[in-house]
Length: 287
Ligand code: AMP
Image: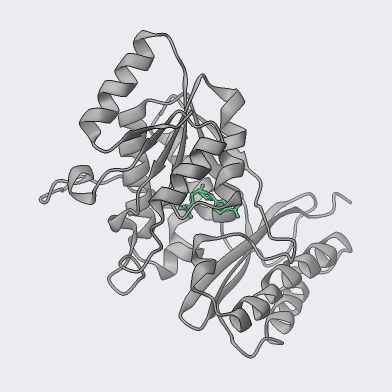
């Protein structure tokens, strides 16, 4: 069945009220569209967890900086609908920015600790935009469950913190990062890459694989970071924005590994003007 398309907040509210009256539970999958297999996997995780699965497709202007790619971000709504239909999504919410935000908006949701690091340090205001739009979606849809991908590790950890600290009655589901067979992490921004850039971007997943082996074989944080940098440097087109090995609770840089420490190895690297992120979630050896 084709999903119901909700174009406005008013239509969304009416839909949600009807579902609630019928006693249905809701799982929400927020996206910015240009849907790929990574997004589809979130929908598949959501499907058995609630009666109704709602996907939002909204390129959220408040999470883009003034010199970022908001205007050119891929918009492929008709194809997105086909993905949603295939994944048995019940409704797709696709509003216009002017319906989502009042022109004189002045209230925001901000996470102030984890947002200081990684992408938050480079994309000022990004996570404020993310937390605000996700809060608005939570208020509109009142889902019991919301699915987010580990691909955007910092976003996921910040949203979990937001849900905890602001008492949203929502279970956040952490979904695995989906890669192409080549190892490249799926991303809507991969569409920007030239064939050569795409080939060279494989250094990201290769360096993370090497990092995983280094950490499990007892190498130090400094040695692991050096190894990652060395592998990325084999690509002449790669320009590193950051390489971070950080604690998964605080996102603070780890200098010395503790035993059994939950860490995140996270990268942001430019290929041409395209900024790609990738990561791996690891635990340091227990002994
Ligand atoms: P986006 O449309 O890029 O804002 O992403 C929407 C959701 O899909 C976020 O929760 C992302 O983490 C998730 N996502 C994007 N790419 C992937 C991927 N390759 N694997 C898993 N989840 C992903």
